[in-house]
Image (cartoon, rainbow, N blue to C red; front, side):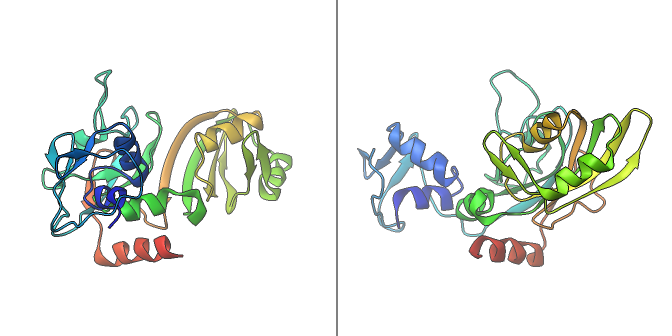
Length: 238
């Protein structure tokens, strides 16, 4: 097994994160620092360590969903001392990591797992995993803007082609909409509506890869069902 794949499978980091650890000399194989990519190791026979800690494949995988509250960062530690998603995971969650991220001021569905290979595939834009949001924007969104959204819109880093978009309700000074995207780019929803001159006021992700939170409230989590895990694995192979 390739070294970076072993590290990802062990839940230490994503594949990309594992490659960065290797480049920085934080990984040893049988006592020797390895900095090059593509090194093949035997999980059963080679002693692989990251930052001095032995890397072992877990006997079983863990998969959780968290309804991330607003005002929480999507990392397991924060140098500024802000609340992190780790604070909301159950004690038996193991060494799980978030699949992608949500902005600190965004709430909603966030998947966690120690299956690094699956997490890397699901977060990669290549697989076009569906992400559905409810978004409150400033101003009354008219049919002209809706038509532009349905036709697709180009941002500075490429096109945005919503899978679906519709108005939930219009107020006097704001509009709630639901939108489904597959690109998964940084701040995509916020940048999209800002470009349309309707800045985002509130944002929540209500579905990821078709998985919904059900009765979960902000700050609550639950393990994924076997059927939900199978669904994620199928998406990761498409």
